[in-house]
Image (cartoon, rainbow, N blue to C red; front, top):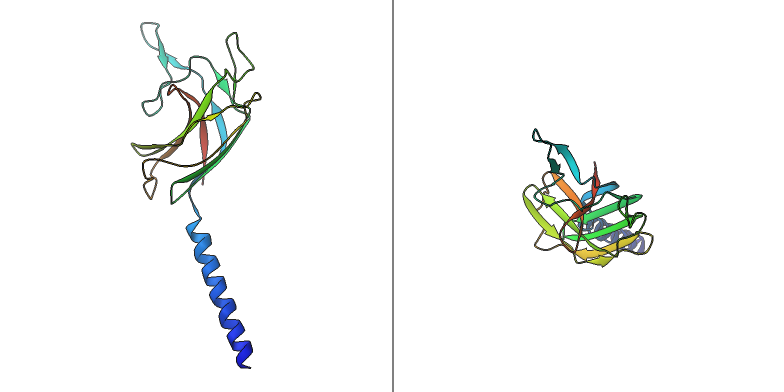
Length: 162
């Protein structure tokens, strides 16, 4: 009888630790799906193009498409991004990765954090597994995830998941 009670206590303790670990690994924000950049958002009254600037970041010079994007940011700032098919959708290099490297930039309200750079594969696929710097605020209000070139231009945005 004592062995059964002891085993139940150990099992309950293990489940409690497993639950705490799962809660610690919970995502702060998630993104499922992506939107490629269209560099011009409008034309002003003078007939001049208005750049599609998001949170102060200018767009890439050509349109870009992205076939798929999934991202999760943990409360500890760890970010994991799986991007598929980020390719140029215009210009002479259409259908290529433009020989680019990209990083993730997460905005929480007006604060931004970023990952390190990773190269795009020939087919536009990329993976980011990094810790955002500076520290990610918790909670992350009005989250926006941009995939940005090494030169600081955005190519794609994540679709927030509720």
